[in-house]
Figure 1 (cartoon, rainbow, N blue to C red):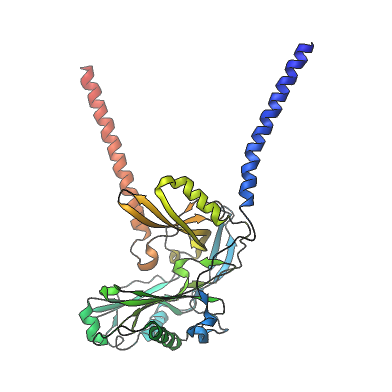
Figure 2 (cartoon, rainbow, N blue to C red):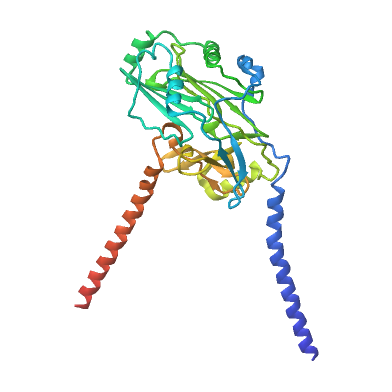
Length: 387
């Protein structure tokens, strides 16, 4: 009797100890994880206030017509995904053509005609108008919600056509003079900036378009330390370093809601996760800003809504068989998982959803054929052995 009670007590104690160990194993990591989420997390924000720059006179109270706006919500099936349901278009395709034609500047305006073969789907949330001329073509993207041009890009056949149109190349312009030219251009298109705009600076690119030196000027916005997706960051201008001619311009922007960052994981945890996964391959890592990164493989302008996830932007230097490699990546700001924002089509439309489908299908199809070939070969060998 006593032996039985003693044996039962031992079993109960052992069971209790196992439960305690199990719970400890469950709750300690959770406690550590929770402690890496804090309302006081330091979120780096790049650039300087627009009020402290030459562009301060652009600040106004009117609405940025290039911005995409609508109704924000949280995807219940994916609680860390924010959805922006876009507003309806406000003009027709023909009216959009008139807006884009007016946007063209001389001396190009007299050289270009509209490529009427370019199809525009009125249901899309961004329309592209293509103009062609001798030695040059121009793409202009329009926001049909507000009726404002949001991007402009020239494509010259070669430097000879460019020089013949704009004049001979001379010495390089200074950064200060290029900034002044950019300001004049933004005045000419009635660009209005808000007080929360950040100036990211000017960058000299020695081998730009057609290997011609150019300057890149960039601006962005932040909301509670959160930066918008790079594609929708605010304002970008590419400027010929000889003439000061602006050959590429983008003012795409989304109006961000207030974003609660109190539960995001810290940059130190992100760094720890990456180091654990990459091991000795990792040489250096830098955790940058917090971004509202665009999700999905389909072009966002083909649907009525945009999907975003909050993600840490990181830069990695890794050692590979080919030497040192610099990589850019994103980590989900709540889970720390790898995150791949919407890929290549964002800038020039090179890789659409159909191409992505075929890129995925081809390896799968090849794998399937290889598997069938292997099974057939195995069957023939088996029959040969039986004989």
